[in-house]
Length: 269
Image (cartoon, rainbow, N blue to C red):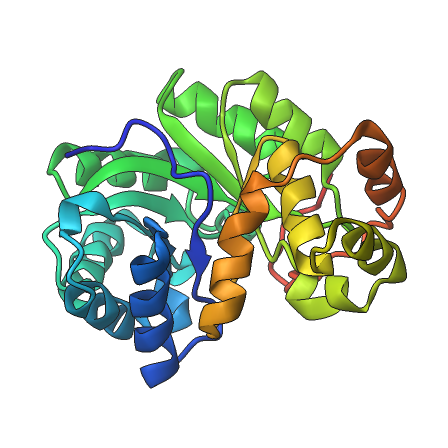
């Protein structure tokens, strides 16, 4: 079946390697996750594929996302690289393929790599296409190239210390869902006393409070974990309804703390 929307939470696999990646994917699927997020640059697509095939969950029930690395954006390489991703993932298609980063310094014109991505979609290699780490201006440009209702998501960094409010609001205004990576700020949310205090009042962890805040903003979180107890807790965080006062307290933590900011990143909003 083809999914018509992103599942409300996913497993991020950034930094997961080898058996850690295999087991995390298998555990997440056994607990009820149905969205697994990987990327060419993570160097774990094969292990993610192993985890999916060994889970016993039918492939058609699992939403799989991968991302094209910027070295592969040239039209001569994009489709070939995606075919290699499919082989590593042990599947004949993925549900969503994202441009991981806009081409640095526009070395490859956006119209060219989005045309190649669209061709991959037409060939059945990917059900949906989208972007990641695109700014407001780049999102507008991509939408002008592709047309309405073609960009399935814009995946960007979102956590209590980087609300990314302008970009999130703009994406949602355009009807483009936002997927939030690093929603736990690589563990930093667990060290924050405001989040810990809110968690104690609810008998929840700081991580669960942070994930509930992300989800309450209409953003789809893709936290990463290898421990089954943490995977389960992250999943159950979506059941938590925060009060306006709690949301405001977490909103106040935003300090523009960007964790993913490589030298080739665009000029952020």
